[in-house]
Length: 576
Image (tube, rainbow, N blue to C red; front, side, top):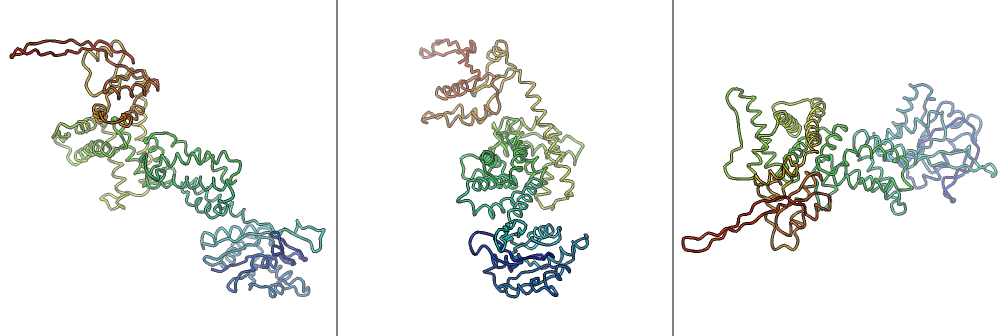
């Protein structure tokens, strides 16, 4: 792992010039040859293991390496007096494709694994500097080479008013770094991988973090981009609140952080130029993630995985998003394990089992139902979902599950699919899922004009109450809270200081499943009712309660005691 100065010798006659890389005596050196100047400026602390390698064409050898008559045109003799060992390597002119490839092999062959390189692109045939940059990028990847600097001795920009003339050495290293940024951006846009961007931002921006705000903002943005892509790569689909490192546990939270960092970078007056085209493209790619619910996040993640060939992650997201869709469809909480696995997962699993059994044994009645071994709300919900699921949706769920299992079991399954099968079918399966979701959305839109009454209490309406709602309020559909939320509403603690925490999940359910076109009938514990009505009215809902007529009836018991019973009957609905 040596340090090497790579340079190409030209054919022009060179005159003594003071080449200057940076201010100060140590930043300049006077010589006829840029190679000699760079060695004295940049290679002062190099060791005997390090060297200069000078690539020379046949003509350059005669004109400037070892001129037969002009002693001032012998770079060989100049380097002999210098502090660094050197080697000349003869190369062709590079006028044909064959010669270009020969130069490529000769130059790259002199660079070893882990070498540290300074590249001088001052001289040579016009194609040589360009070829040298290409070789540099190649050995960086193939041999883990580190670039210490790329320099150009700008003799044509010399100051001729002084003797010897003074010429600047242009540091071209930022252009090489810019090319690396471009490659990293391309890797992200094509494959969704932000690792390369993160690596070069650490290498190139970390030294600037203490003094440059734009560097801090850029690093912060790239770190958030990395967390977002890693959240997708590790399938962090759940929306998690109130826990540490939520942006590493949830795609949704990682996206929200990315949005924030992107906004800061967009508003900044200074930024890294190679990133500017990336920002608008990232914003465009991020649009599907702008939804605030986990169903939208799941769908956006599936499309992202398809676009970037993340097949395993895509199938994981596809199966779990199908379950999320069913939770929402059947008014369950998709973030709760019990709702996802013990209710939806159980119902779907039984239907898939039935589907497979029917394939094995077509004759006979294979009808299977959920057995109610106890009076359980959960069992009732499983039965409802089991009875309602469309056969085509069950078939799709079964196909997705089989594909996910084949991938996650490393292909050790009875029927091993080809990778091209997964590439083709994940697109088809996703489209089928979208068809179901869009059909539901269309039905929801068609019902937008229908008046619905959402019941925020735990008991059933009487027939008279239903008739009043239909006849006098135009209600066509009655919507109940999910069973677990009904129980929560009915069991507000009498000792708690505040009921708001108890109502939070009900508030969330209302936001997801109702519109301000609905009537909400609210009756319950006084404090909870007050909080609920206040919350709903603030958001523009029409909130109702049932007025009643109470009649006391006296009866005489067998022991001559007086028994009073109250008969309560519905009168009408009234808005709070």
